[in-house]
Amino acid sequence: MRLVLLCFLLSITLYGCQSQKALLYDKEWKLIRMNETDYNGMEKPVTLLINQTDKKVSGFGGCNRYFGTLTLNEDSFKLSEIGSTKMYCAETMPVEDAYFKVLQQVDQYEIKENQLQLSSKGVVVLVFSH
Image 1: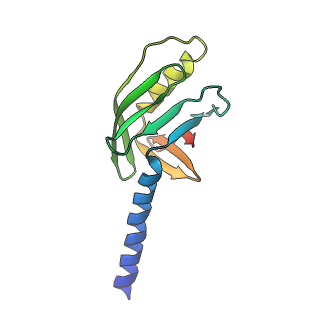
Image 2: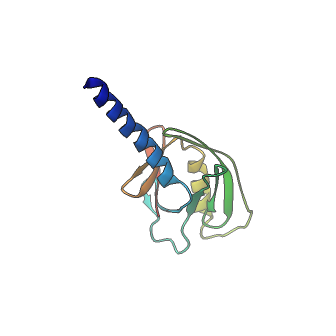
């Protein structure tokens, strides 16, 4: 009986990890909060798209399109090789600059209530919805 219960709990845990990853990919996530600031009402929202096939990320930073590579293990989340186009937008550059800086510090992810939460050192720093 204990073995059956242990196998059941293990399968639920593994399924939970897989379903978290499945929810992560191939949808456009829109930034709703960065640190303590609400960005839910931006005219052109900051976005994040994670391609499941090649583990590449792309999106809109507020002024420029960006791209990068994702390394993902269980709940760890690390972006590298982040690049972007080079336009200048006076109104949104402070948001974009802050977003790119915070994005590079992210080390974990979690999906809760249809929101993608990205954390740095245990603190949620970016929250997205889709």
